Amino acid sequence: MTAPQSANQYSPQEGNTDLYIRVRTDYYKIVYKPMTDGTRAKQLIRWKYSTIKKDHGQEVAENVPCYDDFIIFPDNVHTKQVVDGKFWNLYHPMKYQPEQGEFPNIDKLMQHIFGDQKELGYDYLQLLYLQPRQKLPIIVLVSRERNTGKSTFMHFLHLWFGDNVTFNTNEDFGSQFNADWAGMLLICVDEALLSKREYSERIKNLSTARFYKIESKGKDKVQQELSCKREQKQTCLHFAECSRQCSFGTILCQVCLLQQQR
Image 1 (spheres, one colour):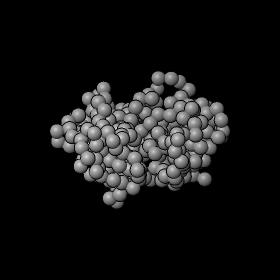
Image 2: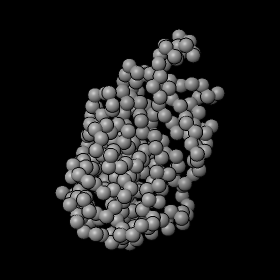
Image 3: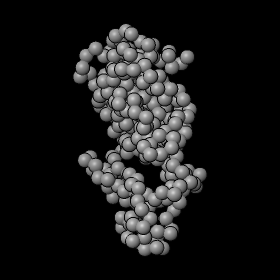
Image 4: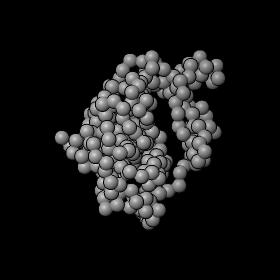
């Protein structure tokens, strides 16, 4: 993989000129927050029209580009910031781009996690990268033991797919507000033990539904196309009605996969 983009490559315009957009009737400032790994994370912060006018003058404020709505349109090869000329894409560009060559450390991780299912694991990653809008089954990483590399694999996915990956807990699935995670490409759950059946049903629905209602605090629900997949680390208890303790070798739990295929 190529090196991550530097902070300078994330500048919105030459000279670090402030950049603003208007989506629907709300104004936002595009900022590039420094991260500890040397990169910058792109974020939208709600801004006031009066502040833009005060800081830059009326001409700049009146010429802020306007868009009809936000959209989540995953594309890791040719990421578009604006879709169809009218919609602001919230999907983030990849931090790294794959290059042809050897990758011994990644291959060791894949062998350790997937074992004799390694090629299936590579197929899954290839589909995530090349066909991010394709529906895929839930991956469940299962082990009786700790410190077996499951969390490392999740962090590897986060390193590669960047801000399109989130880590959820039971509280996230139980909350009525889901705007911060429902549009993600990957939802990773570490050491999950789902306490309510409705959480399991919600997760299964996320993996199969084409559309999902996204709700933010103080805002109406909005129906959005879904492309999220889910990585889960746990014993299979309380999930997809699988009551057995799977061995670490059964990474893609066949009981859970069969539930998804029905």
